[in-house]
Length: 559
Image 1: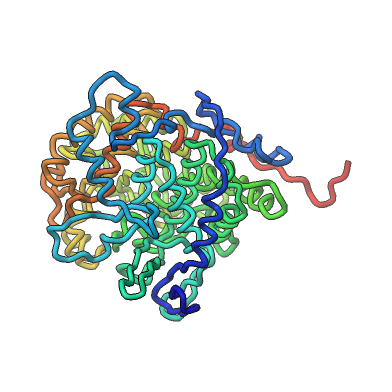
Image 2: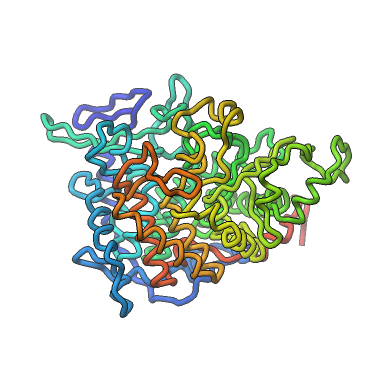
């Protein structure tokens, strides 16, 4: 959909734009004063049981949400966190900040986001000159940690306005709560106006709408709130409605027999055909984390109370399902290996009728005696046993993984360092699919050849997620070792998008240089390792209440 500035509305099926009338709403929200909250040293969040039984939030609803480490602003572009420590930052930190600032996008004089890449050597721009919701997250965290929250607030509000427009792919209308995959600032030199054009998947490869954008938006809103102490933004009617619209898409009832979300291939970071259709771990982990973040921020008013109850119910079911059926360690692998098939009863052990012969040979050698991970996908008669980094790291940060499972994931990374880290952190998935399987699963995709791009490529952006997970599990030495590896290559190689090869030794064959989230991911990892208090903005502690069943009073209950 398109809205032309100064000339009324013009709607189309391929674009979404924002006009000056919409910008008035943004200015009104930005002008609201920010509440200064006293710094607190606790990362504890309200438990599910507290929320379920409280009478409402009011102004105290975000108690304990303010995270230290975000209040010091840098005026010269150096990371504020470095000022808190006596040691000198690595020489490439300054270059990283300069590169990050060069990627900034401005809309009517205000910073609004960062483009995907600033690769002037590339002949084809494609969509790398757009601001992607998922790509901006590490940039946003870097600016929050550096005491520069305004760009994050601008981004949250503008994407919220984009959410409100009608979205169509061909003649089919998307759900009202869908967030854009990306947007671009369009300049009309003749008219002297700027507009935003959003892509909700209608221009994407395969025409798949992004499922993860809404989840990342909610997670980022919570990170902004926790870092700044500015509760007023999340409590605005606009943000409350935005969260409810996203949740409406995910919590609606249908034919599903599982609490997980059914998704198409290419709906997340892995945005091409890679066999992740069904119930991919990345989406389930982000879904879980977004639900927990929303639970902290939704008001218990007439509109929000129903969603709070739905979230509480879904979290109980989702945590049980994921921890029971997606988790794989040595013992569970041995159990699956001995499964009987064609069981028909409520007492069936092999509930998904997985055929033991479908277990790939590589897994038996890959699985250590100590360690485990959440596998890529579970659906009837199908288990995708591949390791996916983002889903497992988010599982740790959101506490979808139990403390024991979190430790086991880190044990696996240490035990399989060469396979998962190699010479450049971090493998997006492992192992690569190749030969006949590659032809069938990817459709002979020339970009996703073995050990390249999404098919076993190494992505530096994942460094920030690995570092956060390491800090949360008390294993900072793993992060330090991974960061040391990255620092040897990233600046010299021009901050590539990804690396190829089993060990991640080669710059990716189609990798863009000066990829913004590679730069931001490194900066976030460095600042988080230097000041672990930053972890609070992106981490949630385990909620014991999720282990208990949800008890609801019947309609006939009386005192």
